[in-house]
Image 1 (cartoon, helix red, strand yellow):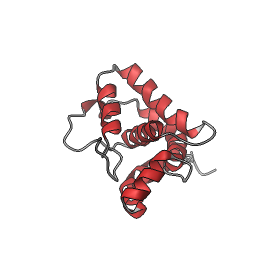
Image 2 (cartoon, one colour):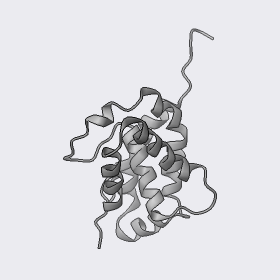
Image 3 (cartoon, one colour):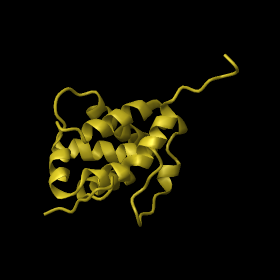
Length: 140
């Protein structure tokens, strides 16, 4: 039986995804983050458990969050434009991964209060929404 909880990295599947990213070079890592987010944000229908967990972990990494007690120098070296490029899709991916049409939602609803899940994701969503907001140049 695997381990999982309310946070974006409180899951064996999320940590397997993180470990796989840690083994990649920079370009492959960026592509895997992009693929995890877009697979959930743009795919029709329900979201399966693994895809949902990976999308939430990817969105969290893009937002600068890291798993507790890990050595994560590579997170700081992600391309600066990657978060801005994927921010809106990452918000959608997190929301879809925790929607009623997802396996992740069903399992976490049975295990813990969803208020705790959204509380753990609040800093992720806040950072992503800020990165996705259009920046105004000048006065107009």
